Amino acid sequence: MEPGFFPLDKELALLPGNLTPRLHEALVRLSIQQPSFAKAAAELAFFTGATVHADTGRRRTEAAGAVLLAHETAEAARILREHPTAPAGPDTLVFSVDGAMVPIVGGQWREVRTLAVGELLPPRTTRDGVLRETSNLSYFSRLSDSTSFAELAVLELHRRGIETAQRVGAVVDGAEWCQSFIDYHYAEAVRILDHPHAAEHITLIGQSATPAGPLLSAAECARLRTELKQDGPAGVLAELRALVEAQGDLPQVVKALAYLEHRQAQMHYPQFVAEGWPIGSGMVESANKLVVEERLKGAGMHWAEENVNPLLALRNAWCNDRWNETWMLIERLTRRVMAVQHQERRARRRPVAVGLAPIAPEAAAPRTIPPAAPPTAQVATKPPHPWKRAWSIRRQRELAGAA
Image (cartoon, rainbow, N blue to C red; front, side):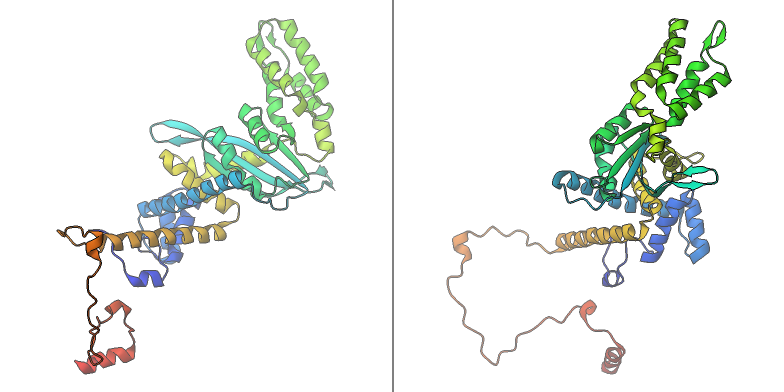
């Protein structure tokens, strides 16, 4: 038996399943906020009295996310293909990208990449010093390779007006894919190596073991990290270079020094601070926890890979404070699919003549025109289907009287 159709469903604008549109939305929203689908179902029952199984929440959430994911993927492709006019951008736009690992069914771990975008507010002086704030943050996350992620992320960066912003900066760690991401979207961006990440490499060099002990004491490492932030990379790199050369061949130390030297242009922290740029990528590291790990990295969780991105698309909408417009879109697209499926079912149920030989074109044309019916002839008409008849108290009384 296949699903049927009831006209009242269309009148009430119902979505698939047996929940009202409002309960359906509430279940999906709770399912992306709560740490599990079971807790989402419990919260729905507490607030509304509607009892659903956790699997119902999972199915409804995955279906809604899949609709949104397909739309956003197509929209990103459209932007890359048509290059529509960009919205007005802010004075200063800054973005960061990073990755977080999530558990996949089968014991594997895959990297979810996240983009965080924000606007820089003018620096303001406080009792503790100059404060630089990033406001109006938004996020975009996908489980994908770096190339696909860069193409998909155009959706959020275009929306935020990266093409028309007066200044654009990018604060990232040293991963090569992060640099490729900047090249793809805004090669002229001010590139800043996350300062804590650079400081980690100084510590790595200083704590490397030798027969005489660590290369640098904890105090010397702290001094170099402070100098890097306050004076820039030139003096720090010169000191580290002399230290490494004096120690001979220490592969891990040579690699860490090469890492810093290759990114020297991204470590002019005094200049960046003077220009009002942030020197840490905290906004995307917070996004890893807020958008990704808070929902997808719970104890005992293992996700089917195909279900990760639908959930991430919904999490992005909620974390970006765009839930209302996003859910209206999901409802509209879902009802459109339902209408197509209804028409397909009607087409399958339409009676088809069986056993009739095909009629040749010349035989199909009538040879004679039948005479017109007499004026007094009554043409029989089929009564309307009960679903199409007006149903009212008056009509009920008429039927009752006729009986």
